[in-house]
Image (cartoon, helix red, strand yellow):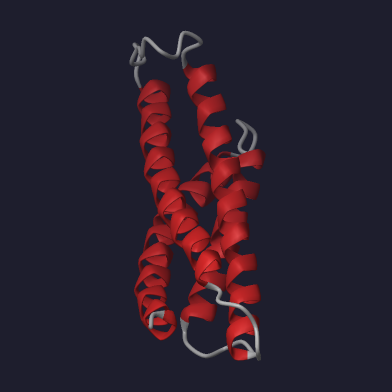
Length: 153
């Protein structure tokens, strides 16, 4: 196809991926903090979160929503950029890796909204999904590096 350079699109993708990974680390940190607060008599006190566990939960949800948005942005960029550059999808295992990560992120987000004392198994599903998501992020990062090499001059 005779289209303009998609380099600007890949820059957005690179920033989105970096911010997604940062969000993942922050979610792991805030999730661990909430676990510690729930399992101890004296929850940790953070000066910038004066609402305690409710403030941490709110921060965790906000970061999670941001990560969902970033991952969906990455999906859109990948599809648009690949179709624009190659004219079709499926040139590497990066598509499969990306779709797995999108599915895991959406499952994690959905399960987060279902956590309650009446359904304790949902928390296990949420945490387990996020552990598997670590592997998914590693896979999509490795396959993404090979894709990036195709676009660089």
